[in-house]
Length: 146
Image 1 (cartoon, one colour):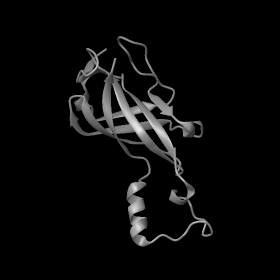
Image 2: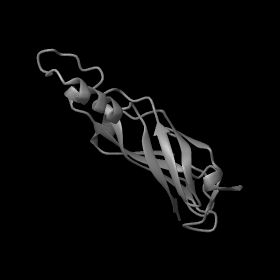
Image 3: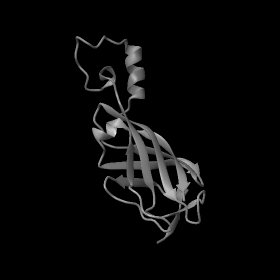
Image 4: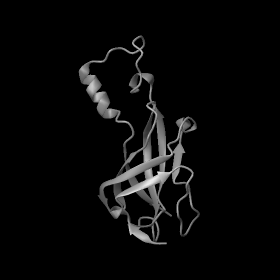
């Protein structure tokens, strides 16, 4: 068992069907999917990169291979604080990711190509949609638990 400063962790990788390390409580699943789309699909691996912050206020950018019909909704990284909640040092291996998947309507999907049910979009709107629908990234914040 070792501790590490949360803001010094460059990246976290979470695996489906794997559990966290725990020191004072029971381990939990590394990946926790919430919502109806979770019955359709859950990624095997999610990787989150530290994009800045300090102490326990760290922002993460997460990505996974998701079908074009799904995107991340709310995502939250949680780690066991070494001495308790709010500790900037966390137990190595104790982090988990809780997330929602959002199912996209057909017209917003990358693979949607029916010319009969999809109206042609103006170029300015297409460029805006491509910025909004980047495949699988989500900024998150960290919360220390226990």
